[in-house]
Image 1 (cartoon, rainbow, N blue to C red):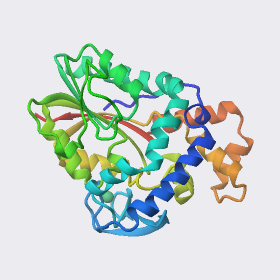
Image 2: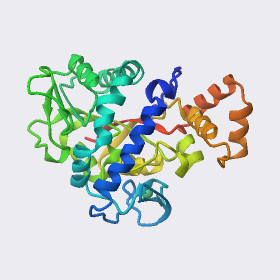
Image 3: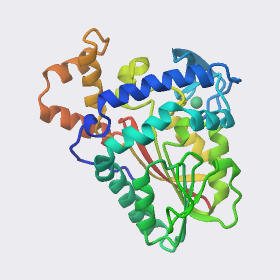
Image 4: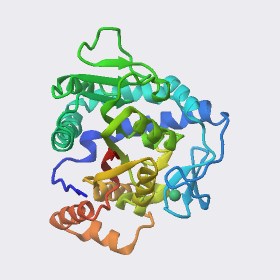
Length: 337
Ligand SMILES: [Zn+2]
């Protein structure tokens, strides 16, 4: 199985200017209070491995995170179902702010640092594993420049985006078919060769249903490109409940590698690549320590961050990638024949 290590230079501020992110999180907290706190919530087992054993870990925005006793995935339970979450995202002021302000402010950097490498990954991997691929289905892409890039991906004859949250007019995009419906309402006419799920499993209630859907949409041997944050990653292991980027409902699930592997196996996928090419873990912990000097972090981590030179920090981050211990996961799956 492949494990890709990426050496790149950019920082959190480029992609997530802290004032805008703070505003987004504050709006999310408000939205959760108004739109989710009174919704019907149901207890669930681990969304990755299915185990019942769990222990309550912490509460965020009045929702409770559990840690799976088997695979150590972190997940919200009790939780809203996907219809409730869909309704939440349609009404959410935070989501509107993200789409109209945050993503526009960071558009140029995101194009260069996220969208370009992501497309390179998809095009190269498809060339390697499924040369004759024609149809690509993407679930929930929310950035307009991503739609443009998808339109330009000429190796695919048919490109379909399923996303109920886009604000677009009929005819805005000629070369991509946009279906403004949630994934579970999509009726499959022709099987797809490729499906992409970028940070979709993170905020899906029925994760097993999503993987079943991916399997159903794909032809045999079809490819599934998936990204997610990982509870087994360095910054989340260190910061845990103190992590600013771990909150519901965007991170309803924060999977462990072990949990994901059992989820993929259960739903008929083989893993062709499992990489954690994150480059921000050390910086995220450093920022959290700066914001809260009394933060309880392991002595080794404090020493690295306060006394390590830039080269040591960079090498440590590269080690996290090569050992699959960064918190950003990039995974390529193939539907088994
Ligand atoms: Zn589990």
